[in-house]
Image (tube, rainbow, N blue to C red; front, side, top):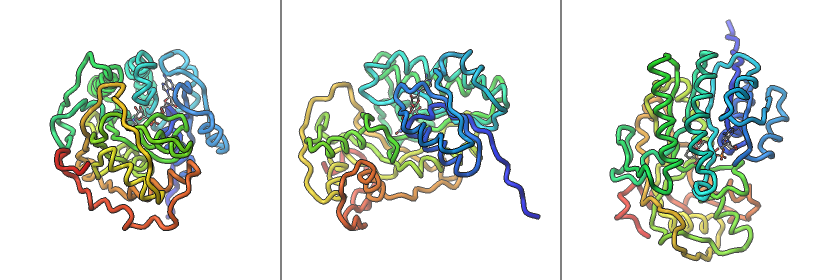
Length: 344
Ligand SMILES: NC(=O)c1ccc[n+]([C@@H]2O[C@H](COP(=O)([O-])OP(=O)(O)OC[C@H]3O[C@@H](n4cnc5c(N)ncnc54)[C@H](O)[C@@H]3O)[C@@H](O)[C@H]2O)c1
């Protein structure tokens, strides 16, 4: 007998943001009902307009730190909650530090209470920032990080750590099914054009014909994960992940900022002028996720960096080389290696 697919009711916080809108769209395409909430502090109205084309999407412009507003907005019994809401972007730490701290703490508790009320399964999106400036490579989930509680990035870093603690508390005390995913740098279409994170910010400069600004000497490393692979990871954890046991999700190739610029110029097919400036905030030397725990649940990376960067250039209206082929950017050239061994 043909099985009938269950239509799920899903609450998505931060639905106007990059990841929240992408996940909402994916779930709507699956035929599920999505209730998106957002206060638009770093999200975009365009992302919501795109989602409102789906009849199963409903949006409420609310701040999740307002517990009463969150309770009033509930319109159905939720099966799942994807909790993405949090102001993002390193330059925003100086502007929205208080909002970051409050959204990670009060806001997250409000959303945990909603999940508890509905007996819904929740995924909390934490961050690689919980590892601070790590001393161990790669970062395995049981590494506790190297974080300064009174540093320039503390409102976000300690906020995310506090959020993880809240999730664990609700799992242990109220038997909530709540999972934690630590996201490492991710990118893809639907990032706001004002997004100050590395790849969109770099593309904005290229589009404007301006030299790229690199803060520091460009040897600091990051990994980069394409949005479709991130969404799959989040869905897997929602379905089969263990509650209150963090999962890293991130790219498999550690690149310095200088190497990323080289990869981008390969995709675009021309040299990109670069200006180096002193960093405006204390920066971290490197990040490298150990993703074996998520891989044990069946997760695999499907999108190469060159393919993802080409998609981003298209999104920003930047012409790319006719054939972005595997030769033009070969991740095997720069396999995962400790930072000090990476070519600059
Ligand atoms: N994209 C990444 O590379 C990355 C890396 C690490 C962690 N994360 C985490 O994943 C989540 C989603 O990130 P993103 O890249 O989509 O960021 P984003 O800034 O594009 O989206 C976050 C959304 O949350 C909304 N928001 C913030 N505070 C809110 C509040 N109090 N009430 C209601 N809405 C609020 C913002 O307006 C925005 O639309 C965030 O929690 C972020 O910390 C993302």
